Image (cartoon, rainbow, N blue to C red; front, side):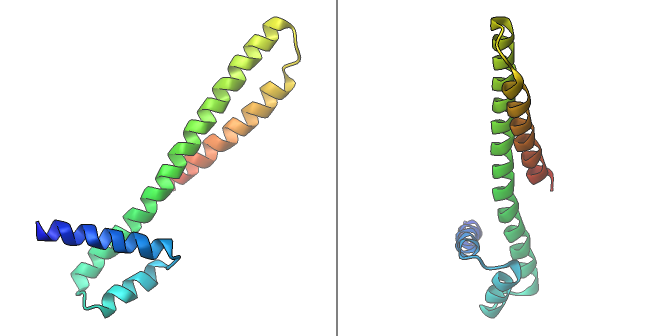
Length: 112
């Protein structure tokens, strides 16, 4: 129970340090100065990377969902405007480009 509580405290401290704009090395130096040994520092380094990757993955998932919604809206509006006999150029090219761009940026963030 004490280990889990310490991990939670470390996560909160690391999130605060990341929010302050510190690099991974600066965070590691601050923990090294407090007396952490080599194995604990390796675990902390993995925890720091995990926290940074979680934020990037959440942003990527949000961008992918926004891209899919925009692509779907573009498709539905193209169908509707085609049957109404209106011009579909903006809806076809504009929304498809915007949606595809958001989708690809989100995928890059998730898989990088």
